[in-house]
Length: 148
Image (cartoon, rainbow, N blue to C red):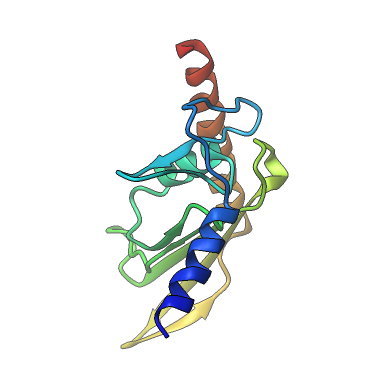
């Protein structure tokens, strides 16, 4: 009975694509994740993926799925604002380096006594994070072009 789940998992991973030639597609930023036995291609643009991780490095992460392109942070309390916390989710929705292939969602809570309640985040917060990620992705792409 354990063979069926393992087989399904292998089929799903095989569908993600693989490459053993060590090349990188500069239009999509497609890079590989290398393990001892195989090299698997990211499911999303690698420049956006790495730029998102770089930009959110100050946040504790709950989940980072390079094949589905979703990064979820834990709640973060800034040292200067102990009664406010933020949680960020990043969606990378394309294999090309495009602004519309990225979506950042910010959640905010404020402390009322001993409980946290939902609050509206500033609309600029998500846009500023998206701009930072896109700027970093362009830097990474430019660095990879000049390195080759």
